[in-house]
Image 1 (cartoon, rainbow, N blue to C red):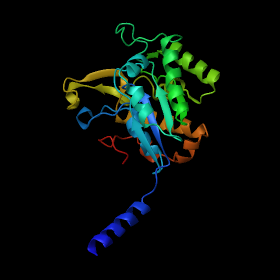
Image 2: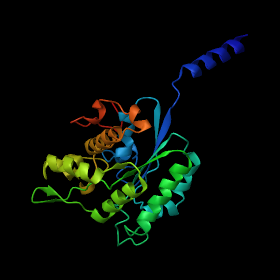
Image 3: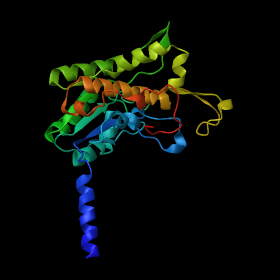
Image 4: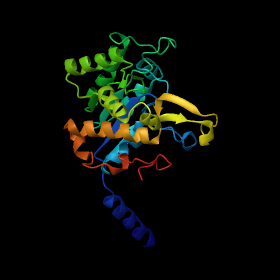
Length: 262
């Protein structure tokens, strides 16, 4: 009898748990990736995207540092997504930083050649699973000239825009929108959005200090996640209904001190 009661309680608890409506899968690079606690304050926007969602949508972050579309596929990471993705899921794709790297030639993907072809493969994986693909242009870097943020990956961003129009795939123009956000913060003010710390700041992850205009601090990653969430909601896709109307966890102006929503 006690075993029956225990089983009944377990069934009740399972029934009371909210069913996940879907999963958002993220394919991308270091700017979107998750980071361990010992790397704090470095963070990727994918770590915080879940803070913008209701409890019925999960986030599966497949983004890994240093990956281009070429190496992401070459390491069979797209195959892993194909194994996991289900009807009704969403696949967010943001690459370009490493595809543009001509020094590390194993990463390089020509914007109108391999880069485009690789994105088409990713789109096909989503569509064949009955999932929704969403293309994202490369997130901005902190690169100012005369008070304006320069686009570091225009050819790759234009390739994404063109592909989105050609294949009728929803687009988040993160290069444009994140660039405007960083520009509004200003050349000096935007340092806090990226990894800019001196040795005297005593940041354990960067004991010698760091001046990195590509990778984000906690506040920067939250802000980029807010832009992605805002734009995803505006697309009016099925998943958009699960993006919260207000996202206070992403609007913080002071760091929480850890990669958590609140």
